[in-house]
Image (cartoon, rainbow, N blue to C red):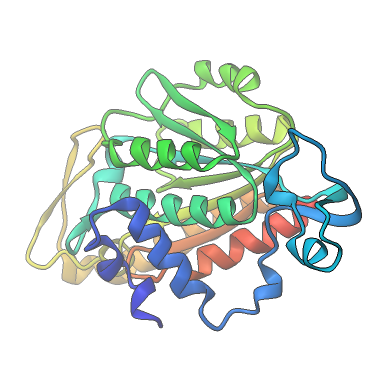
Length: 295
């Protein structure tokens, strides 16, 4: 594993934009560059430059050969709209080691957004928390990427997840077919997250769910603690770690299996990510699903 993709090393970089660039640069090292297409237009033909044309599409090699300015035109738009959805409820304050789930989520989204920007994609953001959700419309320019980094830096987890009654607002926020990437711990009390995913499906969107779990959750490794607290309800439960471990692992495996099947039934891509895992697998999943979205 590249040290540039190690979560501890990444989160030691306090500047989110620099961290995202560091992660993507580390991911691209040794990667087949043909897998990274950008900025999203497939070449078709040349035409003469006209005042007002986007200078990014000038072909300087043609200028060198002909001493005239030519614009590369395209027939097929290969960029897409990618909207990142963050669960910012209180359960995302779960701590594993030196950082929280919401921290991992922010750095993961920043890295994915930077990679999507390199692909020429429009990027947007939903943040779900308490009585509604925050929405940043999808755009393609670098200033918009900077705005997203700013919003990510200021997210603080707290409260409960957005109530299903507000999901209807997604229809006005959504702009056509999108790739939706949902980062969440999939903690729910009354099936509200599955209702949200059903809403996404109703919008005819391709959906990826990155399910964040702490390694201490997966291993039931809470050192000498004998009482655990639900971060959203405040309820506590006493537990004997040593005697409960085997039963816990069996129930956890059953729970994760049920989750996978529920999402598979909805044609939703699911990936469970431990907070100890490097970020490269999520970046690969994004590229694969992005390619599927374009075909």
